[in-house]
Length: 258
Image 1 (cartoon, rainbow, N blue to C red):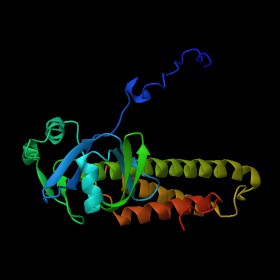
Image 2: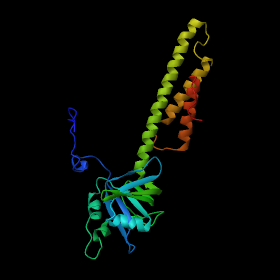
Image 3: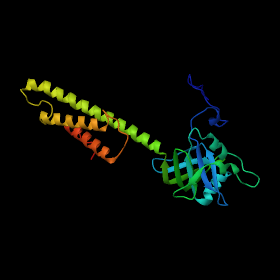
Image 4: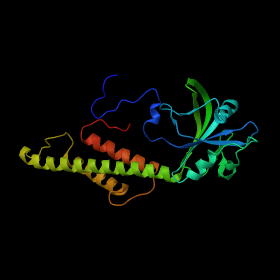
């Protein structure tokens, strides 16, 4: 093996490379149904979305009850834990007793899934309900369990925070367009004096440029440049798209929202 590039260390492949460093992975709780009908919950950390559509997969083992349950039952749930749920995940990881039960699971708060036959762990931030798509065996002692998401839900604050972030980005973009429209109007006015009042930049009369600037200013004010909104609805989306289209049209560009 060639020497590593300066500042780079070659890892020993005689061992799993994952044992040689730390990395970040989501801690999830996978729910399945035991043969006797009771709910089983097990922690997993090797899970991720599978592609751009509604598929989710995680690494398991044919020797684990979780994978056996899913193959037999045909479905599973995924609950994404919060950092303060370490006790819950420890309870889910507790061993089975001699009678093949996991008493620790009784202390985990759950609610019924909405679409598949299973349970979701309470107080998490994201939940998936999946039907088994396939399993891929032969990954050493492990398998990839792949499911199609048939239902999903999220904590309200997660969605609201994302919507607010998107709105704030939209507001800043709208404000940027408004400033550009204002700068263009100022440039028109400066150049018009040298062209005996004729519009030197675009075919629209100057009063149309001022009207576009006025609408952008009004929309920016409505959408939170001068006041912060906390809701996110279709009226906002339509207003934003209309004003962006108008500003692009004014600047001689193709309207982005059709």
